[in-house]
Image 1 (tube, rainbow, N blue to C red):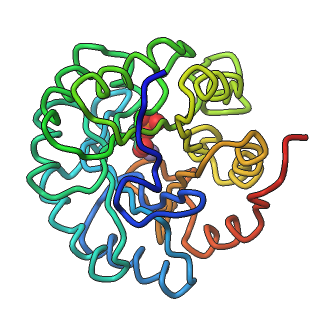
Image 2: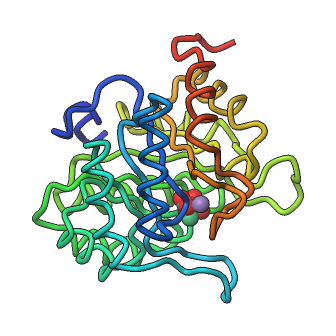
Length: 264
Ligand code: PEP
Ligand code: MN
């Protein structure tokens, strides 16, 4: 399979399992600052800070993201935590704005990975840079669509690539917001040798309980890191309120995980 750079070789100084944390959505500068302060107070500094700036909502009428203004607030994160910033891009315009605002890493969301035209437009907008790109699995369990999106970035010369496993939409299984279908990330790792897969337990479980269990399972399966939505006041979050955890809970979760446990 095609060569690509491991996360540790992205030039961001990252080592060990990649822990990405931060709110589902950037809401206000005060919110971003409070999350950073509580991360510091609880001694839980993630490898990267995530924040949704443009939110692809399933139905219209809910909060659709603060937009470019929110990217200016990422300076608050750099000031307090001095860690790389990652945001979701859903089209070429988002990609251009993210580049202009010195975002360190972009990710493509599950609703975008299903659309090869959108993925290609984002890849074309990022062409000529060496920004790392993380690709979430498509909403539906289609391995080729997931790999195809990674290939589109690879084909324009972007080699700092990783995948994010956020589960698959299934209206019949109510245990999970998105069914994990663990064979999918495992297959991806087999088909594209060395492709690192970050597990996103927040969007799989859809509620706070169970995030530790899914995170541990991901580590047992040999996945390479975690993306956990973190908010200082989750119940009041403007999106995904049920699944976000506080920085204090994030610390407990990370302390409880055995990162070296072999597959059972
Ligand atoms: C998110 O990360 O907040 C998000 C919208 O994720 P997904 O694309 O996995 O639904
Ligand atoms: Mn979310």
